[in-house]
Structure formats: structure tokens, C-alpha cells
Image 1 (cartoon, rainbow, N blue to C red):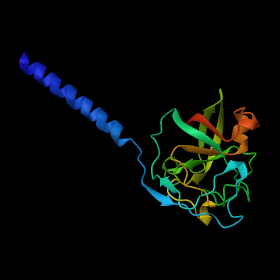
Image 2 (cartoon, rainbow, N blue to C red):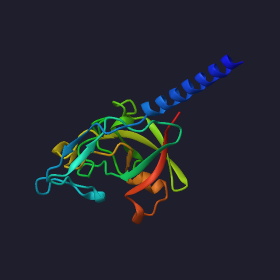
Image 3 (cartoon, rainbow, N blue to C red):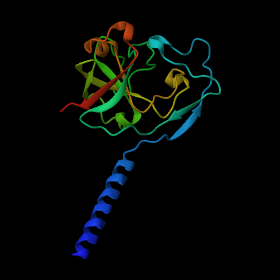
Image 4 (cartoon, rainbow, N blue to C red):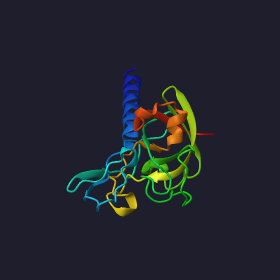
Length: 188
């Protein structure tokens, strides 16, 4: 009888340890930091209240994002995907610009997953509504503060950077556009 209790206790401890290690393996930790530099005059587009890098400020970088589930928590931000917009150059997935009237998004580096979500759709849930949006770009969490990134800091690792069309579809008043907690999932 004692052997069964000892074995049961050992299996329980192993199970708890495996669960802990599984959760620990899914944690996304910073991968580094980059030092900001002030952009040359007129080189950081602050449309949609975008931040510009600051001289001497250190910015955290990530190569990962939180695990994706059927209801992945994220921060929705506002981005222009049009030529001359605050999104910088053409979209990573198709080397094209996109109308802000189309529901398109850029995902943080880990979720972008080496272009594996390119031109696929995700569902975004927020403000009591949902919208289907196409992934067209990466919100780079590994680099920033240079001309390629419009002199903006690296993206946090939990961002869905969305066009105006996404914000409209979610019914968010324009005065509240900028940043909002949302959930998202891959479409089937």
C-alpha cells in the first residue's frame, strides 16, 4: 500500500513539473535592447500618434510573441499601410501598399512567424464586435530606430497593428483610436 502512495506522489510531482516546464517554455522573454537615436529632421512620420526614437533611450527587442490560442490577448494599435503613411515602406508580404479602407494588419514578429501568416486572415475581437482582417506586414519587434523602420522604436511583442478599416469595423469612436486591448485568432 505504501509503494502505491509513493508512486502516486512521484507521478503527481512529475506531472506538476512537466506542466510547469511546459508553461515556462511558452514564456516570451526579451531578446535584447537597442539604443535609440533621434531621427533626422522630418524623417519620423508621427501620423496616428506614432512614437519616434529618442537619443540615448534603450528599447527592448523580442524574437518571440506570446503563444497563439483560439483567443490570443493582444494590443490593437493604429497604422497606415498607404504610401507616405506611418507604416513606412510597402508591406512585407506582397511588397505593396494597402488602402486604409481595407481591413489589413501587421503582426508582431513572433506572431508574423517568418511570413507564415502572410496574406492569411485573422479574426479580431474587441469592443463587443469582431472583424476579419488580412495579415500583410510585420510589426518588427527585433529592430527599429532606423530609416527602414521610419525611426520608430521596435514593436512590442503583442501587437496587432491595424488599418483604420479595422477600427471602424469594431465600432470604436475615432476619438478613441490608437490603442485597445483585443483578442485575435487564426481563421479556419
